[in-house]
Length: 110
Image (cartoon, rainbow, N blue to C red; front, top):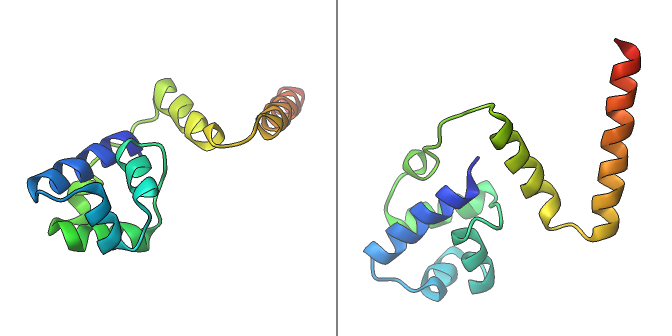
């Protein structure tokens, strides 16, 4: 899922309706800070939040989620980045160590 593109589509629809981030956030029952992070693609959203946004925007879920599914290296790296970006440094280092252990195990198993 390309959260940046999702956020851009949400922002486009919000602006089309002449709504502020704060107004849309209030309608969706989320904070305006979270709304801004969604529009910038920095945060993911749960299904309930997505449905509330779609209902307020008057669009459809399929439009907002209309990303092609790809398995490119860039896409995989972007997914890794999204998962670890919001984690503290200590957890990021721990995740790297776990990945190294997994890859070492897989190489030994081949």
